[in-house]
Length: 513
Image 1 (cartoon, one colour):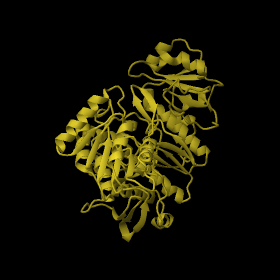
Image 2 (tube, one colour):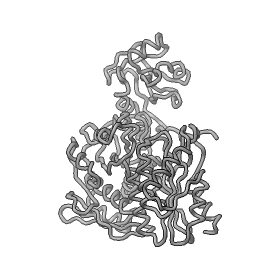
Image 3 (tube, one colour):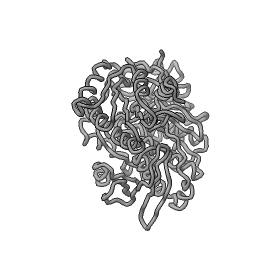
Image 4 (cartoon, one colour):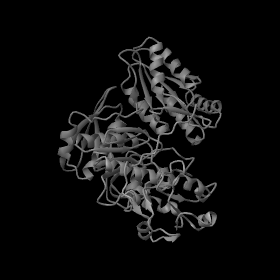
């Protein structure tokens, strides 16, 4: 089956920018005549280049973008930005060429100028980073903003939202030209507040350059992405640039992991702190008041006797902690605690696709589909499921191929220690042998709990059916990994696939509504 990639979103109309003004703004040398040339977009990728675009030809790992100038011109590029090496490759050009060394370092600012995303012309911008919880926090933040009467935008791992329009995402955080185009589209649609999920990779690759956030939040840091970063210290340092004066005004830091204190210590911007842990000193505290399969109630206590009570339509104390972080971010942005309490007194209205999402009908075992794919995510979600389950807890999971293999033993150990029946299956094998991934997970699980009931079942369609066939009413099944995703990556091909649909089909086949 062919790979399906969602389209890049741009504003429907753009005020053209004179190339001459663009060159003057960034003090760029121009080879050729810029007179009369108008820019209506910017692209670093010929796969999305449109007539009227400025094509940014940058050096890459394997080749230089200047080698694609002919294709860019064929598609309608009206000017080129490149470095001296790129100019040498281009030679004589039929369109003006602007010289800029290290163009990637300036890409966000260039795109912001082309799309008119300038200070005073932007919605309120919120950003959340962390290993786990950044998607959930972003959705909860957007939900509360909507209840406060804001017209909202969202960009996350799962989806993009633009004033009620929902679009499937391409990347957790888009490349900077796409991000700036998205913000311009949101402005065009009257969006007043935007929640942005920011990954460590996005910061390392400068994807949020050209953006300045009103408030940024940090959820936590745990073992993940060590295929991209040498160790946890380097991973931490990759996230810290979000808490700089260049990128944000104020910050909120969760102290539920030890790395929270490092964020506070190294932040360039003023921060307040929050925790859901007993005995931890912080400005704000989240306390759980009730946990059910349908919702988690909580109270958020802060300075000057402030108490905000609400609930999230989600399972688990960690989800209440995410909601608390979102609320404090809004208070730091200037929304009053009284106004927020009035808006969410009957609960936060948010749907989080694939985040401990219950797909069960009126009868049968509870089945939850979740996006978690790290040891810490497994630990929190299994604990949440256990708390609301009378019977046995089944867990179904696999691991990403061609990604951080060092976390697999810990994933298997946590899964084994937190479940009563464990079923190991496939996830995104990519170019790895799925059988070898399963074996590594199986061996680690057996080592952790030799007497646990453990099965290895492939493919995942069979694994969920195995779990459902063994489970009874009162039991719960947590299928961790696929979450909201609508595909599996098998040897570079995105094969259409839905864990939610497979789980529902398995329940139906076993006689459950």
